Image (tube, rainbow, N blue to C red; front, side):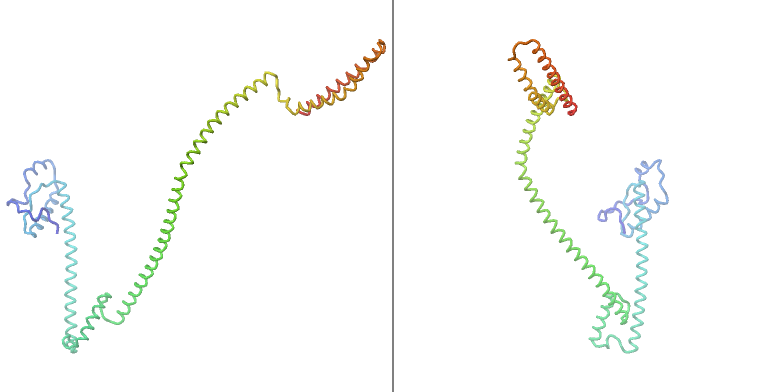
Length: 312
C-alpha cells in the first residue's frame, strides 16, 4: 500500500488529523474544494496510516495535493480490490485442491494405496511423474495428456530450432555484410590516404595552371586589341569582304596571262620603231595597234568581271 510521509520520522504531537490548519484556511479563502473528494482522501489516508500504526502528518490541503492524493487513492483502491479478488480466487482454488486431495487420499486408503504402504521406488517415481506433470503444465497424469504435452513441447522445440536457424542465417548474412563493410572501409581509407598524398602535387599543378591562365588572359586581351586595330586599319583603307586572298591570287594569274598575250604585241610595236618615218604608214600602224590595244583592254575587263562574279 502507498504511504505518505517518512515511515522512520517520529510521530507528530497529537493533533486533530482531519482538521485544516490556519495557514490553509488563509490560503484557501475564496477557493472551493470538492468536499467529497477531500473526504475520500482523508478517509484513505487515515486507513493507510492506521494500518501502519502511525498518525497522519499535518500538511497543507491545496487543489494540487488533493488531486494528486485522490489519484493515488483511486489507483491504490483499484489495485487493492484487484489483489483481493485474486487472493480470494487463489484461496478458493486452494480449498478445492485440498478437498480433492483429501478425497483422492481417502480413495487410495480404501484401495490400500496410501503413500506409507507403497515402496520407496514407487513413491519416487510418483514424485518424478508429478514433477514432470508440473513442468509440462498438465492437470492430470493421463498418458494422453503427457503425449499432447510432449507433442506441444516438440512443436515448440521445432519452432525454436527454426527460429534459431533463421537467426543464425541472419547472423551469417550480417557477418558477411560486416566483413564486406570492413573491406570497403579499408579500401576507402586507403583511397583517402592516396588522395591526401596527391593533394600537394595537385595544388602545385593548380597554381601553375593559374599562372598560365593569367598569362593566357593577358595574351587574349593583347590579341583582341591587335585584332581591333587591324580591323580599323582595313576599314580605313577600304577593305571589303569581296577582296580576299583567293580573288587576289586569281587576278594575279589572269594578269600574268594577259602579259603573256600582250608581250608579242609590244614586241611588234617596238619593231615598228625601227621603220622609216613615213607618216602615212605610221598612221596606219598606229591605228592598227590602237585597235589591238582596245581589244586587249576589253578582254582584260571581261576577265576581271567574270573573276569578281565567280568570287561573289
